[in-house]
Length: 116
Image 1 (cartoon, rainbow, N blue to C red):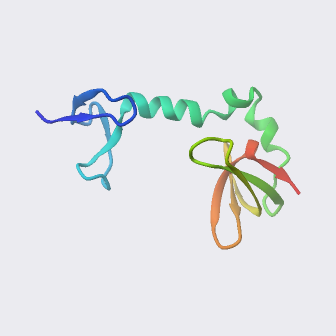
Image 2: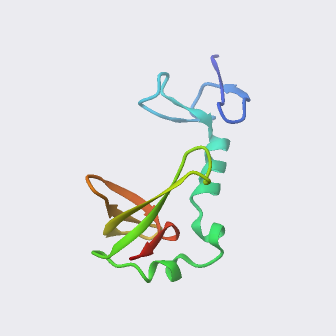
């Protein structure tokens, strides 16, 4: 049986969907990170309630579709490299808002936006 090394933790696993999520775009049809590392990444990066310690409903209330906002985009290596962009909310969802920027659309968490 073929094995695959997780790029996050470096452990070796059988190259099956039991240990890696499927990814049609990947060379061998599997993600490069194992399921355990992917779940850890999701838990750390996409749990707004845990990160800010307040209910998302409280944060979301101040934002409406059509409102102009200032959004903070964080750099890949660390949150120290950030950029502020102005845009307009065109869609509102439970944990993020879709913002129209100059020539593209991008999703931002409510905690990364402020009303202009």
